[in-house]
Length: 135
Image (cartoon, rainbow, N blue to C red; front, side, top):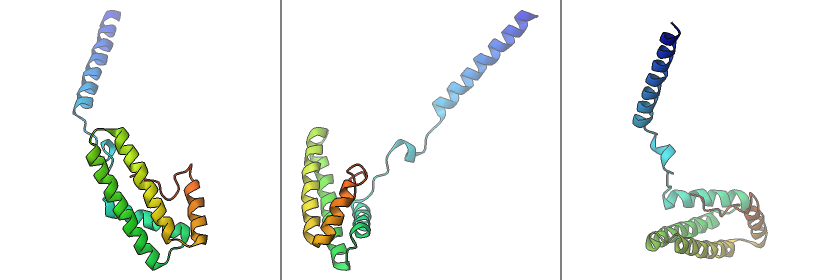
């Protein structure tokens, strides 16, 4: 009788493992959990412009200028990544250079008071601030 119970338990465990293995092999995760959704340069520029406007109280003209700067920068970063191919070191170096250029252009359209707010915002959030480039 004991051996029958042991065999039934063993059979149950074995069949459960087979079922779980099959479920694991056939399950598919939604694309959103397996791949990062990439924003378009336009959407990213709009988001960064809104972030900058919120932090620095940009006027309409400054907003338009900032959006152009962010858009051009995002497109240049994408082009640099494509040109670098699989060379991550080169891609990262190019991106760092382009982000520094973008920061100078953004600072050029700000008033002295806005520049202070911009610098403070960029120091916030562990240095990510407004000009983070986490897409």
